[in-house]
Length: 119
Image: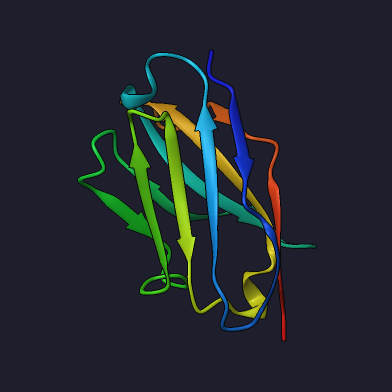
């Protein structure tokens, strides 16, 4: 069992930056693929970024490439999402998710953190 707790959301002006953190419980954090997903009002949840167990491989949605950076610190059981050049369309609830290596779906979810970007 893994518990995920996000932090770092808030209100920021367009062009600004935020860094989200997601701390995981448990001793096997390094065996999980981690991801950030988001859900805007009246829209489906979408993947934003993902990172493999070592941090050597990452994925980004086209909408955030060049602006967002996902990273992880296995010693701290934490995954981060650095968000720069934020746009109003980035406004959403951001969720941290985890999947054991080899699994095809996200098995563990955080409670979500609100990110609001004002124009």
